[in-house]
Length: 380
Length: 198
Image 1 (cartoon, chains in turn green, cyan):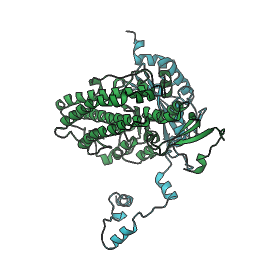
Image 2: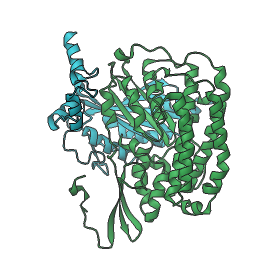
Image 3: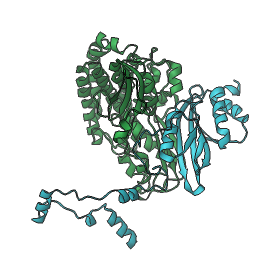
Image 4: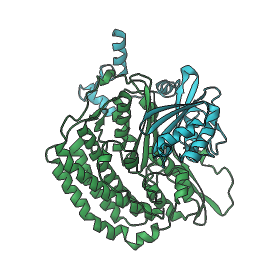
């Protein structure tokens, strides 16, 4: 960072100070900076400053074969990588008119919901830590690790699974995998009362989180808020139900909503989603053994694969909100244009700047975690 | 049931009022509109006000240097109709100026800022055109097709040999695992040689 970028451009009054949150700060998710102007301990202005995690994915993808990009895409969002792979694969399938086998679609749902569970456990921990409670963080990370074990068993990778390819998935489930999955779900289910006592009904947390960073439904729609943050304002919208993809229209699940739209409500919605993901996974466990057939559709030689010219706009409900991919092909062996719209490109920039202004300095980190903002998705 | 209550029908009634818009049905919940650049803001206003397309999902920019044009795609979602409309328009690559739709859709602020940074398209009336990701970037807009990232690296940086002294010593004695760049399976040189041969 060059020094001139950190000079206060408008000389502030002497009772106002500029403070940098980040790019390396325990209260910030990932390497991201928030420049805030404080008057006492009240934030009077905030400016998001990204770019620390910019790796130029959109440009890189234009220079690589369609199949090579598979190894690149999960890295766009570190805590919740599976939706990226699935969205990219779905976009390529739409362009090619590939029909994905039923079994592969169910396996993708399994991966997506496991990833959502892992991401939410991570977020609970992070949010609790910003209010000074470190135990839920350790618990959340430890319980997430059990899910990572399942990822490792299923895909070979703990974090970046690189499991989906255009046409289907790379491999089938190992023997007895569903039993171990079921056991892990039972364990996470049994942990929820502990989490409730420690976090969700703990007055230390509730009093901090209530009324922190409130968003009304009208504001949320105006600012492009999506996902759990939108559902925390009372609007029951979920891409999985209202713009269904894969086999979500065959699955039963509810859409948890809350009214107040503050940090507390956002966390409660995620707790509800945790239960719904477990419910979906149990249905997958029941149905998957009866669904036979191949796990991927035949694709042309991936090293000489010219995807037909066209465009595809794919939307997916990631753990953070609406994730969309716009992929354009000109008929070549590489994508012509890829545009990734991560949900956090709204939450971590305009929404965060709005919500932080006027709050107290100790709530900044909490608001960012309660929005579940994921900076790598913004910087791409 | 009146057809006007069906989402697609209601949308087509509204679109019937707009001149010079080409409608293509791409899927059950996907509609593509092609519209002239000067008619697009009015179309967005109409879609938001009359058809409930309150959510701007994204603005994508595609560079078409052969046509000397940028394609701007406005992806809109209606929570009432559960429909996605992608409004496509094209603007001249030079000078690359268009109007901001921030007044209609606030999320546009982020996307327009991003497109300005990556493609150099200026949006008149946008509240904020400051750099966000490439704060220290002085070069040309990097997402344009003519920008060659490898060429830029070769022009602006030196390649370094990253082998430390202790490894060089080991290799001098015949140890270590060293594959010379020419023999590396995926090295550029290998690919270029194959190209020449083929």
